[in-house]
Image (cartoon, rainbow, N blue to C red; front, top):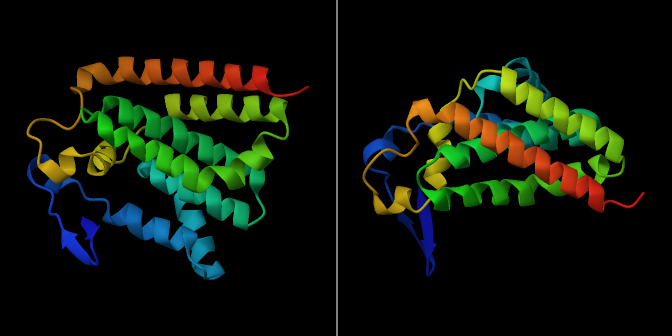
Length: 194
């Protein structure tokens, strides 16, 4: 990790469990999805779409941006909401509450291009979000959910202890995340004109 400080970069090496978190595959795929070369982007989209359950939520957000670029806004919205619900779950099972700010950063970075299209049709928006939540419920989480811990203060301070809730609490945390997510969708839909 690097931090900018008065014109110089200070490298902070994660310690303990944080040092075990490897996001190199996700970083490389994200770079390819967001790259300027359409050939590379097409290959990255194919890889991400072939096994989305293998990638941490930032990849799904980047996939949504690539799909917007490729003129596939409906697919982009679906992948954006898949990434969003998974990122929220990862934030909810992370013991470092400050790490949850990563979700807002991802939403801010990737949301505008997707939500402009998605919110234009509330019926389609509801259907897409329900489909994303259903996908999240049934698709395995085959990535390192601890990615989000690298975005919290514990990664810089070397906070001791586990970076995630114990696995026996995950199903309940996932269910709470989905219920809250869908409640927020209902509130948004009620606020839309028409």
